[in-house]
Structures are given as structure tokens and as C-alpha cells.
Image 1 (cartoon, rainbow, N blue to C red):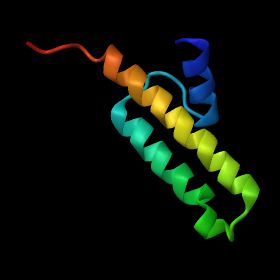
Image 2 (spheres, rainbow, N blue to C red; image 1 turned 90 degrees about the vertical axis):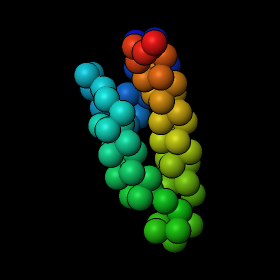
Image 3 (spheres, one colour; image 1 turned 90 degrees about the horizontal axis):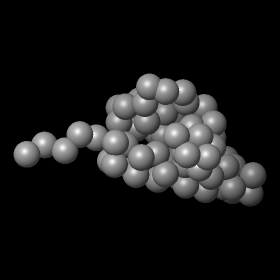
Image 4 (cartoon, rainbow, N blue to C red; image 1 turned 135 degrees about the horizontal axis):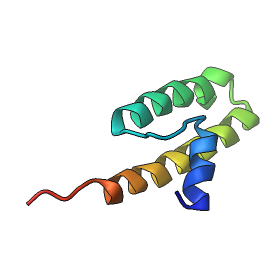
Length: 71
């Protein structure tokens, strides 16, 4: 893992091995927990959600490039 990927894992409180299903499940839990609409517009929750979204994107890219290519 690169430093950015390791930080993304830490943000989402995940550890290897990482699968698409694990990533998606964890993302949904955290996105719901920190969504501003459910936190009465709390700025801290909004910032946390931005970090979660960024980490999710980083790990999505990691999983795509590490998946074996099929012929």
C-alpha cells in the first residue's frame, strides 16, 4: 500500500485484506453516520464525511488496479 492508501484504510478503520464488499459496507455505515442531514448540519460531521468520501475513492482506485485482468 502507498502512504495515501494506508491513510485511507485508517480513515475508514479498515485493514487488509480488502475486498470490494468490505469497502462498500464500511463506506455505507460511515456515510450514514456522518451525513450532515442526520447530524443537523454539524460542520465536523460534514468534514468527516468529506474525508470518508476521499478515502473511499482512493481505495476504489486501488482495488480496480489490483484486480486481475480477465481476457
